[in-house]
Length: 273
Length: 313
Image 1 (tube, helix red, strand yellow):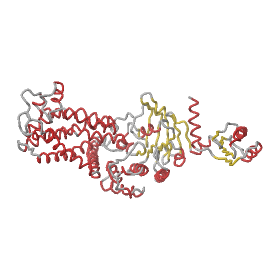
Image 2 (cartoon, each protein chain N blue to C red):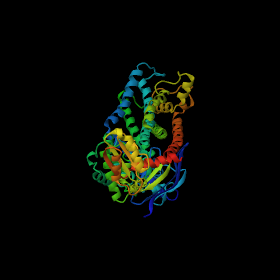
Image 3 (cartoon, rainbow over the protein chains, first blue to last red):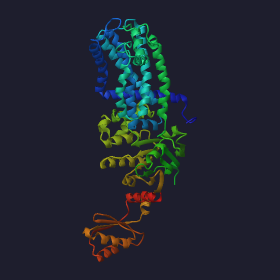
């Protein structure tokens, strides 16, 4: 297509407008599926109640303090991590039902499809975060360090969420089968559980502790605890990622984007079959 | 003959050890319907995927309206559309929602997208279902939506990959009607199918594909003519089957195919009279309930062609 493709300016504009159209597509789906929105929004609230009151009744926060204050950053991280699952199942469904083939055979921008998917996920993610903030405030959670650090914490969540949604695009294009993708969804749970989101990593067996310490979920949780001024600051001998959680989250995000954006674009434009 | 708008020359494509295409050639004149006919696994879909820029050939080349499908994929995509088993619509959107989305992705303005969606829904009789989710559509409605989605930009070439597979006869008839309308508008259609009556109904020219190659081309009539007329005999008494078979063999020179109380035989060309058949059968003491002289069906041509290929290999 070299030299014969439309000028770069056009292509960039198309990438943007086509991407927006596809974001609109996901929002349009939600409009026709009110049940799904309700479920997606109730989920965070259920998590707060379940973990906050069921687990919270038995768990001691290391340096004292309220478990729900300790928990909320972990739940924010958990919701952030759900990003790749949703994007993966939607991408896989498009790939196996032939919608992706129609996109590919149209004169539309190549990059618009993955950008549209990830963009749409970002909007759903913001809604879920808002719901979670609301529930958190209801059960007594609060950020304590003022506006700027609070905003920084949410920005970190959004950056990592966006990076993770590209993992979802790639995996969805790789499995190309919505049933396989659906079956993979429960695999998301261990990812979030193997972290400091619900309990400190100090007491875990060595190998699990190592994995949990380096898990981006832990870094995001630690960073938000710090930025919100919630309890659960790392102990003196904490691993490097928990000592430098903000840097770690940014490094993880960059690494995921650098890896999965090109992989996804290659998988999308590949014409092997 | 006008310039061909679709040209494929020596297309090869292998998936691991499976050779889907082994030097496929195809040429479709502008404004005609070309039926690509073949059994499952013959390479029809692979050929369409290459022509629609979804897949690159290992060897050979193809052009749509003079543009190479590999090197000028963008220009090709602006002129083609794809429907059938490998293109689809979003089940979670309404029919109208799908059309508007794909129209926007075809870079129509918001207003034009809206208008074009309504136009197509109206013309292809889906207005009543326009605001229902596609998940609730019948198979036929879904295919029709799939088909009209590919018409948003009035493509020069429309690829229909098995557009009616799995549909009931009424829905098939509706799809056929829509395809005929398109052709009347000047769209060139390349249609793959395993239903011979579909090719018979719609196609100006037929390319029979087997084992990744085109093994015969021609109009449906030309293809049928290669096989000669056929004689069908239905017996009153099945016990006379063997006697009847002998009579027919003597007359036609080949063994008839036999099913229950019916016999069917290919006739040698020229000067064959139904009266002779009746007389010979009568002489042998066979009572015929029905005797018919007819053109072969495309099915018979197809079976013969794909069969002969087997013997050659």
